[in-house]
Picture 1: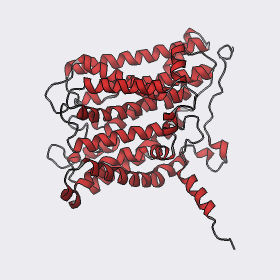
Picture 2 (picture 1 turned 90 degrees about the vertical axis):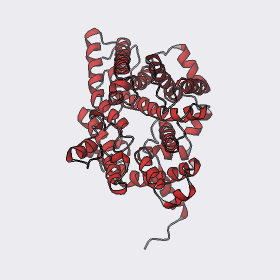
Picture 3 (picture 1 turned 30 degrees about the vertical axis):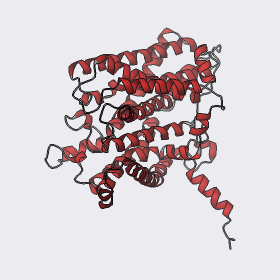
Picture 4 (picture 1 turned 180 degrees about the vertical axis):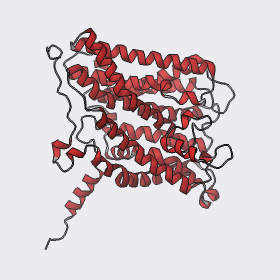
Length: 433
């Protein structure tokens, strides 16, 4: 007969349950940044419902920019985390994980939790404006668009269903094309040479090409359609430079792991991480003054669009470079982002991202909120608390159980056998190809 459960064992069990799946990774702090990005988007959507993002005041423009800030960090993070195994394998001459396994990981991470949240939207808020398609009943084809996340390809559907699904659509397209981009870079470098220096230069040229494609596409769409809400502005080509910024960080990390030297200015910036936060703050203030007030008939000029996208990319890179390229632990912001609350919030951030608009709209439809009136702080607090609760349930009931199927062959094995094999770093001077 077993003895009574000790309090220490209960505490240990709780710690294991809430422990981030990336706790053993050298980049576990990125969970905190992911939580910060999700919180930015949540605050933006709550402020938008209260009408606080409309107007010419500094506060309105600052709140309006939080949405783009969060999305830019998410896209740069995706570019960094997903491209890193490819570029490291490219520089060391080893093969990255197989494409089928990579795509299975991405499918399990994104779609099941999305399907659950979308189904909940149909059940909980059947009369939501997000489900109103020209005043007609939802057809079978509409359901197919919602569940396959292809709304951005249909006129009038771009921001229907889950309000955040347009960014997930872009993420999924990036997941699909990333292996092909990595393969193209590796193929070109094999034709030119096999040294790590040539390989990294080929990668940098490929990233520059991605930026040029995004610039040209953004120029064309701004000139042709103008309005930021045009569906074509929600396609991946419009945001390819943000992913390329994350891929640039991954290239710098891989090059450093292989013994390469980064530019002196980059090393100094990572040695003093506070510089990155100052640069990010200055760029965000510039974005605030540059942004045209939401709800006004004036459209952004072409130069304003380009500058704004560049500034948000710089913000994300300035925030993430010290904790990806840099190694110093003296950064107070690193310690903040590594704090238990933010790491946990980052762990459940995907659920927060999926559910917060549903939670917000459900709260504002209740009688008690009508009695209180449209109070921003009350709605923000209630949305944040309820989103954390629902996202926690989503993580432990949907997302985390599916992690066991990411690599079926490793289920049941202990510890290290579960971890993905990372190619060993090879010094730049090595002859290994």
